[in-house]
Image (cartoon, rainbow over all chains, first blue to last red; front, side, top):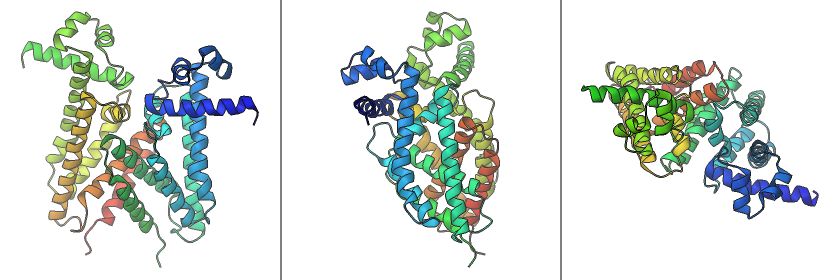
Length: 197
Length: 197
């Protein structure tokens, strides 16, 4: 990495922390410059516009998600072990010490009716995520860990529901039990999809 | 209803439509006055502050939810028929022709880290809702429609997850299949909780 790239990485980490507090829409070159005690013109050299900054910050969050949630799961044997790892890494991601919770989930509600580059990137990321979950489920079917009639997209939808309820209950209700509820819900789902033995 | 109350009701219906587009935080006496072609001072006579307006608009949405989702479900026989009605009325509520989807769900993401009167009202409404779902589940257990070991709060959590995934997929991905996915997920959940026969 060049010095310029490293600087940009550090700025993006800070942008991510700020966006998690104020929302991606609240993130601006001015607010980030104030937080970093940098000049706005200095930041403009890295990011040409507010929207560029928002898009790059979201990409940074997506990269982190990939690194913290997906990559360790891919190190597990394919099938149920990988699917379980994916789910538990995702729960751990929700629990990470960030003031605003998961940036992608917060931004989904923020941008669901705002057309533009941020929404497009969110949708692309979500589709990639859902495809990757469906693939992990398909591999679990192939391995004989889940019943052959399991619908990977349906099961993926239900897993996402558990994650959304966990995020919602943690963030809005401050409900500490939501994690164990999520684990119980996931187990019930997996048991319902096990092959007849 | 007095004429003053009727006027206020009409204004709140419009505030609800506006908030569903711009978010509850984007709702202000100025933006509502512009939309209704009324003077700001006229609106201030009804709502003393932006926060009053936000709180009353959220209360209006909660009342509508009560009327459209809960009241018709209470007309069904208690037990599984009522729980099913609750769920399908809730899905229908998500599908209603409102530009911004469910105001309570949008506001939950918007206010989960903004302390104040709006968040307090959201939390109170959510707790009431979850209590009412748990009660409907308990009545279904009492009626022998669900197994006695069913945990009403756990099942309620999982039902909320299905609703959240439906809202998310409809709003962000424009996925029309989310409704049938939701119905299938609910049936699987109910079957898993049926008493052994």
